[in-house]
Image (cartoon, rainbow, N blue to C red):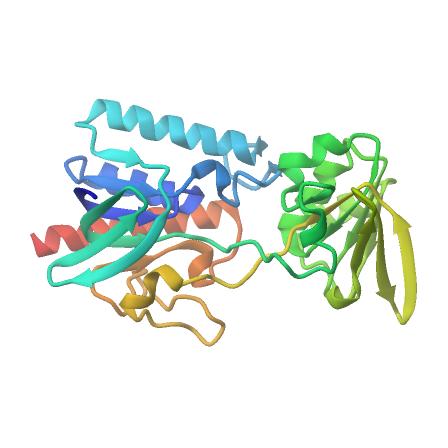
Length: 314
């Protein structure tokens, strides 16, 4: 296996991770930084139109990620090729005497410092019929696949700003969008809620028990059944978008014994450091709010303090 090394390894190359990388590079361009993960598979890349970033009136998530990647490329070109997006997924992280070893499918990387910015994974295998119809009418990304369902009736399942953006994106292409929310309120920004409620082709249903939902069809998705106030509802749909988020997955960090909060997130100090010396965490993996400006700031802050730690240790 090929061996490599860096000063800062950032696990997670979405909005938070790239923001941390830009901060660390700006703080010390002589510091070698490696980003692990696929930027276009990040939660931000799967969002629709983002409208809450100061100075940017509106940007589609995938376009914003591309802009960040372009910025990293420019920074890397001006320096000595020390800022690298690897597009590799991490299989394990182990502690060693003077740092850490990160293992991917292709190589082992020795690093002095780690920033965890892995975000929240998709919650899959939850809805009856979901696994039977993946790629046959079931999708886990409305923004990625919504245009394929032009003119069809569809359903989207989830809560919060993420699913609200997804429904608003789908309304542009689909004849009717039924939004099934598992909680009594959608828990999204009021701005999004007003848009949803004023959209003629979006039907919002709250308080829907996820266990009551069942996707049906022959070779492809044709219908969906759910319970509403004790009454069974059957609707005809050609696609179902499942936009549920799970709690963080820490399996690759098992060797580190990271401290966790009671809610299952990484516990951090004021500078986003963890209970393990040299390990930091940023973004939703530590329970931060899923708002682009907050995630950018939290990532930037973490990159700043991680670089400070390196300077202190040197």
